Length: 117
Image 1: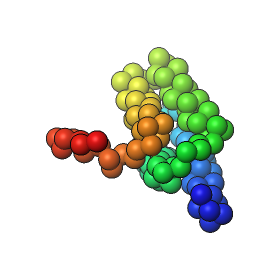
Image 2: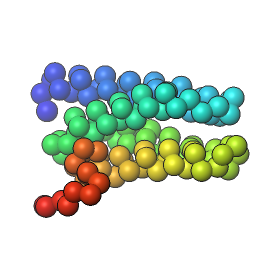
Image 3: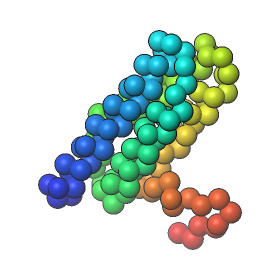
Image 4: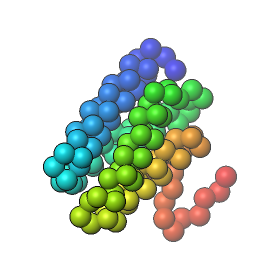
């Protein structure tokens, strides 16, 4: 990965950290669900997955932050009004996490279209 690509990836990781942090803060402090905020975090995460698709090295700090966000969502799910919502959001982050580990991106998986590997 060249220097420019590394800087871009780092800025995408910073954007994800900022967006998911704001989202989780609202969930934990005011018990509100800002769907737009989560959407921005998910978009940043998809960009990161795209940047990491052909890279053998994945920053451990980023992976830890993503797993921690999933764990927080699952823990807060028990105390949230609609208990399914946070669990579904955690599942979406978990799905992208799994794709990153497999070297894939969300666009690689199209419902109803068979995959040939």
